[in-house]
Length: 161
Image (tube, rainbow, N blue to C red; front, side):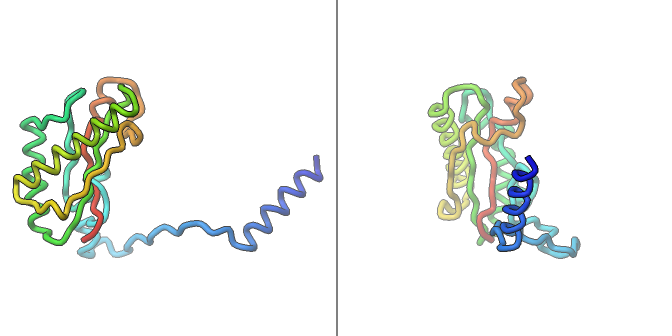
């Protein structure tokens, strides 16, 4: 047993000495009062770090934009018009009910509906990409109606300024 522990310790020591490469995290700005920190320009709407863009919610089994979603998108369009060079990706998400293929398709329909509405509000389509994650990136893994509602969304991700 001691021999196995010694071998494991030796391997770990060799790996750390030779430098097992891992991706480095981007350093956070230390000056919280800087303009970049105030704008939170590189992030996503789920975390609240996307220039003030807000996540859009959807009813069950739907990609229709209700009055609340349209209000959120009008505010998001104004932000995007004010930041003319910013590019975004709209991520379509679903709750964990339904099959994988069905949820991927529904997530794509949600992202596309949001993109089209932003275009109708005057945001250039070349600044917007879409992707569907279906049920793969849940905010809440609980199996309650409240959790399902949190997961049915279109999230905004800033891809460039």
